[in-house]
Image 1 (cartoon, chains in turn purple, brown):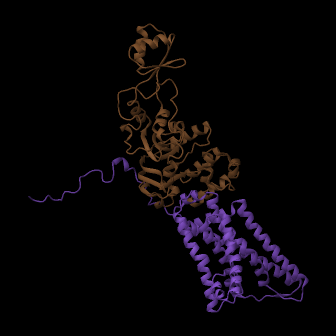
Image 2 (image 1 turned 180 degrees about the vertical axis):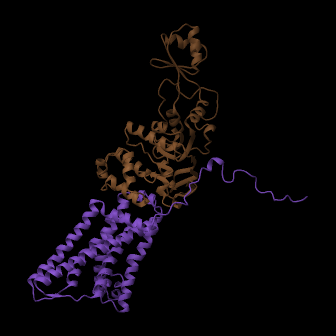
Image 3 (image 1 turned 135 degrees about the horizontal axis):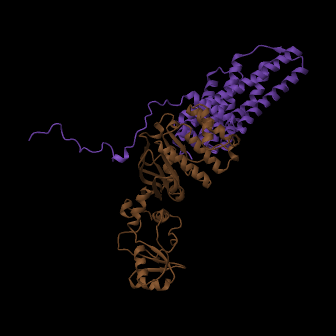
Length: 283
Length: 336
């Protein structure tokens, strides 16, 4: 018996599923994905378009002006001391370090507390891309606030120069970079905590713990228990950041402390947080 | 255009959606109807990729939602009108959507106009919106990208009767232009007014689906006709009807008789009883809905049916279980 040719395939019928299930297909070939820049723009807008977000940023700007203005007043009455840019920016930096991260963390956590994540992820289902856009927007906000910090500091220096002429115009590039790193690490810690916890109060508590409580505790234990001291330095973010802020990060050991602290407090929680967001059921 | 195949979603030991399959066609408004907690919202959330399914799949126009580039341009979604930042104005919420989708800002005004939100209302913050205004804003947001498919969860919730009528017109027009609409509700009369096709769901399982007429007819075939009658001498008429072997249930003013109206009329004519009112009882979708989902209602057994229907189960010839007759799709292992 000859083999029929072409070989008998499976019975002919509806190619896939019953006919009723093969509704018209939507042609998406003409639709471009949402570009990343547009997502960043939306996230920046979201940070500023609520009264809470706007006034938080405005309050930070006002605080910077108050703190640097205080240094200015001191300078106006103290003609013997030379004032440098860093005298203003460091103090302003200490204002920004606890507050800026909260602004950025809110970008993530408010999606959950206000339940806007449903709309956000229905508009752009690539959740990781959305989180990266938030990170980029947070970084831009941090940069903008740092710019405010420097502009106010420069303005104060100009006033001092005109009225007291007690200004040292020398600036240290490494010190300025150090300040930026110091601020951005704080932002990164809060952002990582936010993705992991997805809850505003818990994120703020975790951020304050990592940046302020843990260093104190670790240093205290290290003072009492010598064997722990060297190990503890790797967990002490504030201590690891100090050489960065002062622009004196040079020894391998300091680099080690800095990088390990970043790994423990930023990279690991962020990786876990991103996994959580991608897998989460958005309610 | 919406295809759901064998969709199941479990939470631990609880099955929220149990092997659900259905199709929503272009040009039709499909109503997704079921009591609270029946699995409507979970199904819709899986459709738009917010909840991962345990088994099965759901596609829109042949694509998984997450594979759609710029999905707002293809699928309009409204899952919860209140899930927006209370501190944003209505206009700002639409502006964010339009920006993300890459639409001209004129689209925001067009949509606000379409859903009849005045510029004054649109400039209020969402926390000052009434539920009806939130629903209108949510519908505006869903329509922003001029999508081919609309997925709306309880969109009529909070709308006043005029608002429901407005939405019916809007969705009808949208479907007539070839759009696909899936909307859910736990209120039958809302869906009845708006939907062409209906999917009834209870306890995570689909208990019936089809268009309104098919659903009613398949139900009628399985029950005995019921007639209510009011005459000048109900007692005598009841006696005469009983003598014919018909089951009669006396009500406060009327008799309910388990037969066609013509039969009652004939008996009345023979005995010269003056009829005041004679009508066959159309058991509406409401009864069908309650019956089909009765095993899944929180209340357990539904209360006796309103009107003059005979008490107890219909007296017709034995024809299988009263719930879930074969015409609706058999339910192996029906929920407790």
